[in-house]
Image (cartoon, rainbow, N blue to C red; front, side, top):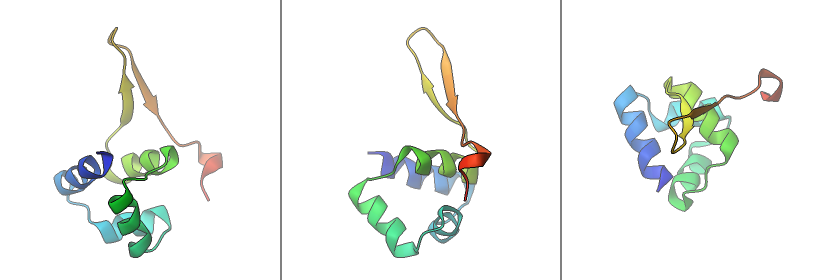
Length: 76
């Protein structure tokens, strides 16, 4: 489950749920719902990686890594 990994990432980076909710521009209750439902969008995951300072990437079988970043034009 991605929610468990996000919680671990927050703990490792010393970030909290309240700060993440603010960074995502949603209420703490809305963030709690995302954790409960394990329903994070690709844009959420990219923003979480920026918030924590951890890159979000896909590792392919051949060793290639594709790093996802949010276009600055997409930010509100």
